[in-house]
Length: 234
Length: 234
DNA sequence: CGAGCGCTTGACCGGCGTCAACACCCGTGG
DNA sequence: CCACGGGTGTTGACGCCGGTCAAGCGCTCG
Image 1: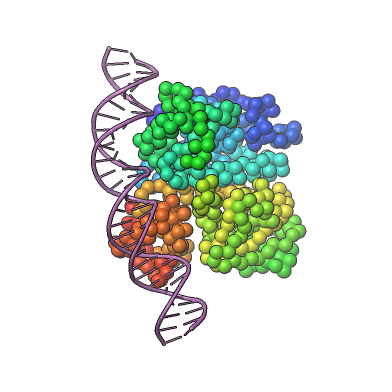
Image 2: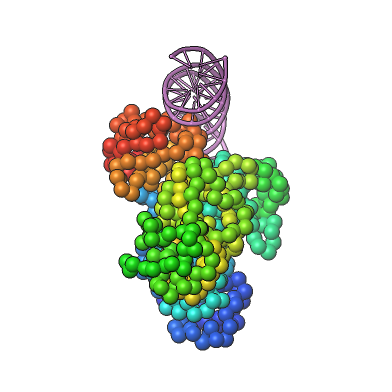
């Protein structure tokens, strides 16, 4: 386990008004009056690959808006093994469950370099009762989280290994250049799809052999999609 | 629990006073003033086994508070097969996603005789912005739904067939008589755990043979748990 | 240049899917 | 009352997908 210094993640207090991804996130449609209700600092933070945002059962200081990168949510099962519940992307709220309980239900780990804003629980509680705009946004975020969880289950944990890996590649497609797709360590991918790392490797290799995808790096983390149809109909 | 007068909420259709799970549900801690804000009828509804509450993609009239019975949420995957996303029990809110989008993300089907209250979206929208009490309850329900989804994934779709079936039996344990547990058709159970119905049948039979559970009916739907430890450490 | 980590590949085998037969319950109609 | 048929659960035989174990390869970084 890599020791992470929490202090080092802090990049300063952020100015939400000038946030680059503001239209995606919780504060998208706040007005000046709403901003006036914020009486605690919103911290700008960054984590390296493998960085730990929080652990399962931790008491929450705030929730995190994910501005850049991807975060995996990890739960340890009763028999000790680790299970990746789902992966969050830019615009998602990390640790949203803390709004209801004050504690985190799973562990959150950065899958690549990650930037987040940490919004204190007090700010969220104030705003969500006093600003109907945030209230509505929040509802949307809950719904997205729930749908994300259900989709994850329905897409990645159903069918043959080939089908799962195919769905995974489609799900991890980049937003901008949609013919590229990111992968993670074979072990992580296995924990996401309930497959062994060797099986993941075999299926990925198979797809490359069959010209469905094409490796773009030597680390096995970045691929170009050559035959999207084959992935959909796997 | 404060005893509450809620004449205005009934409209002759729903009698919240007789609701056995009032302290579990959304309206648990509304006060007199809150109920005054309800300007649409809350309908009391019942469905038989197999009854359809709504279909995937339906426009929502309201959300459902589940008072009695169990409801399965079904999603059809891209390759046409059906997948049971999760099962809701008394106290859960069925179709909560409609609060954010106005539409249902999955199909809801009664697994046994079911009683629900249908609360119109307009009522929910009014109340949740004007009553901090409902707002907090709602947050709790979202969190429960999300945790339920994650738990479902982590418990029932991980490990060997034996482990899945064992976890399933524990999850479906009755609230009152905790040594009894309900099952559904082997096909439904398979769709929940991503197993074939024959495999489910084999594992259930195996557990009976090993004196871990004991059948209480001839339909294979009700069992007594004899060796709880064996289920936990499967 | 060597150590170490992650990815790949091969050989083998066991668990689960597939196909099929059969048992059992129950409703229907002769 | 029994015969019949459909629906559901069970059980068996067999094959294949994916897990297991192990070896080898290619990066990266000291």
